[in-house]
Image 1 (cartoon, rainbow, N blue to C red):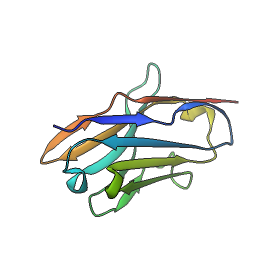
Image 2: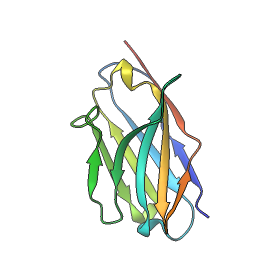
Image 3: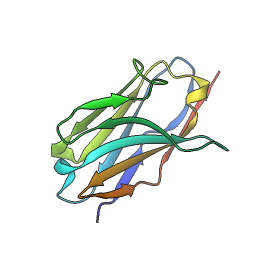
Length: 115
């Protein structure tokens, strides 16, 4: 069982930055592929970025060049650095861990970007 707790969301102005954190419980974090997703009101959940257990990263085109995903295995934490935020980035951001063929989700943290 893996539990995930996100933090770092908030209300910010367009053009500014936020850093989200996701802390995972358990001792298997190092083996987990970690990802960030987001869900805006009345829209489907959207994949944002992934970092593998080997720290290889991929990004959605909508955030490429603005967002950076990183992990700290010593802290069981994955981060999402979000720069140059836009109003269309407004959503609940959720962390997902994939390990041993199973997916685990956090509850999410709200990010609201005002124009």
